[in-house]
Amino acid sequence: MDIFYKICEYQLHYNEVFYPNSGNKMSGNNKSKKSCVTIVGFIVLIIGFLLLVLPGPGIIVIAIGLAILALEYEWAKKYFDKLEGLIKKLFKK
Image (cartoon, rainbow, N blue to C red):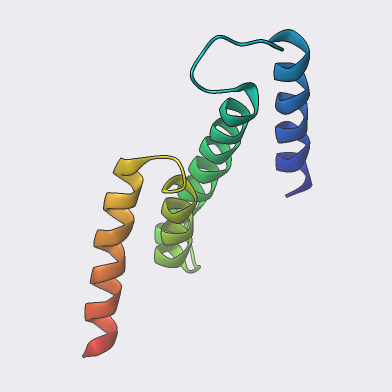
């Protein structure tokens, strides 16, 4: 996980140095946060899909990846809510 923190720190520093007065609606820190959430979320999601065919807790890792992506993306929140409902139905029985 240290590599992800280093990537995020580098991205924050890069945005502060090269875009100090960004005229965009999102500040450099928000862009960096979104890019870090996207990178980490998709990596976890890919690992989760790999664990569906390999031995491991694939569904749980996919849920964690969607939860990470849901911090920034509405579509991921929608899929996470569907998966959460499915998991609740499975454990009710």
